[in-house]
Length: 124
Ligand SMILES: [Zn+2]
Image 1 (cartoon, helix red, strand yellow):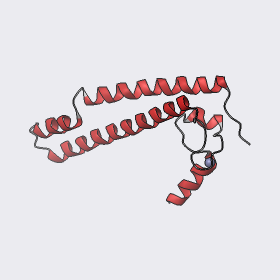
Image 2 (cartoon, protein in one colour):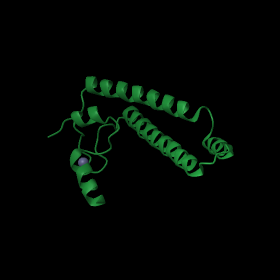
Image 3 (cartoon, protein in one colour):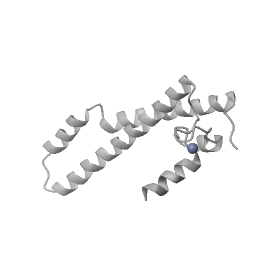
């Protein structure tokens, strides 16, 4: 049986989300070095290299890293919005409160352990 979060637990999770948001923001900024993704790709293409496949691989890795950061940032922002709107901590599938232990590990979690497990099994 899960219960709603206490004010203290919410404050702790909010602080963690904000910390995480700042971290991802920095990572993305570092990563792209102030360039937009298109410019970044163009710059890499413009660099003359004999080892094209190496460049390709590096470029792909670059993109993947950014995509992951962007997705992470989106999940964190969405969680902060849910907090603000008072919808935070409820499972998107069954509507039950998500356990605090789970939120502590993954403050942006959208579903309770049970529903997440069901989804993972369904995806296999
Ligand atoms: Zn659920």
